[in-house]
Length: 188
Image (tube, rainbow, N blue to C red; front, side, top):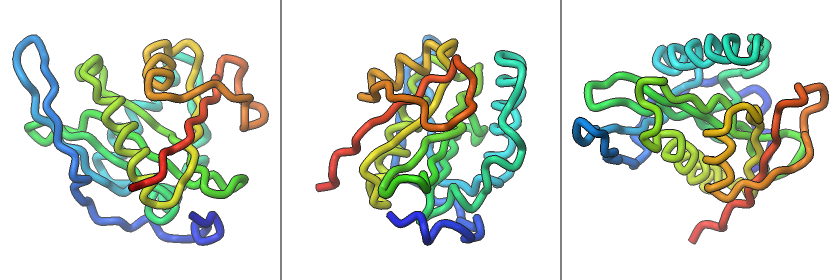
């Protein structure tokens, strides 16, 4: 995975099924979902990212700068963005990774979000596992990410998935941010 090939690629990636289908039990019965690769700026991605931004502003009082994430960064070979759909085709969760340019074969997971009506079903873990799989297929050996210490559900999810705390890797981030890392297993 070379960060040099990821500087100017346009973010045009047709949706493709990631080969992951899952069933999650809910009190009212099973819910079929599908996970699909989407462009970062796809209408369904944008809808979820807007909800993510609104929630961040409500919880921490701010969101990332609008131009911090470029759509091409989340398209192969630089990255990947996935959306989870409910059985009726509603986008209900998302997440992505992009090449971390300062270190070879490292990707950064960003924009992990699950619609509040669909939380506590394991969708975040499903998205994270899919991103790790795609990152390894694209040549990554390590995943890094940041989350807020206030988000205990996310910190528990990352820790249970094998992530460990590391020193902050982005200067100037708020003190409540926690940085994590995980070494990916080589593909068989």
